Image (cartoon, rainbow, N blue to C red; front, side, top):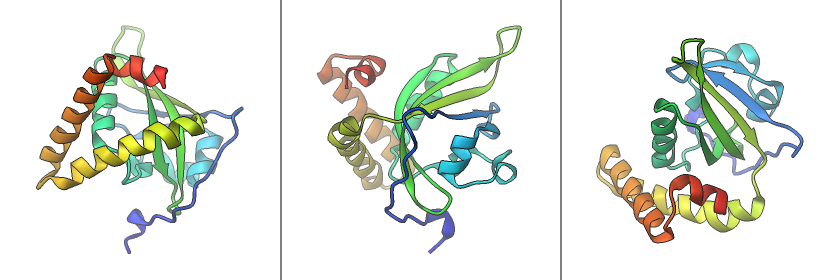
Amino acid sequence: MNKELLLTGQERFFSEDELIVTKTDLKGRITYANEVFLNIAGYGEQEILGKPHNIVRHPDMPRCVFKLLWDAIAAGREIFAYVVNRAKNGDHYWVFAHVTPSFDSSGEVIGYHSNRRVPNRATIDGTIVPLYRTLIDLERSQADRKAGMEASMKAVKDFLMIEGKSYDEWVFSI
């Protein structure tokens, strides 16, 4: 099995008083990673700096959630999201992420900053895991990645319409 796709099924945890922090450039390459990130993700600083942040992307993370995230930060807005990541050895860990654009003195976006906290376990198990499983199944059921993304985005939009909430309102209501 390709080491990049290795999954152990083992979950890692970090303390509620810790924050995972990373910064990236405009292309999503890591420019800063704090010690908590390095520890939970299992990477050394020198092996992670300059790498794409999606190096920790777990295959069970719906692509449509990342599209929502990138659309928001590219437009200069912050976003909150529940994310499952993959550590270097194939373990996984859940976070509640707050991602914001970083601006220079003239107001131009120069990169992105993310703080991640320990998520509420009941929310992960009762709401996020079933929703993400449905979205991943939709994405994988299509003949190509683009059609999969479109199907899962439609499902998210339909879900939010039924809930009567924006994505941001929904995330904070669960």
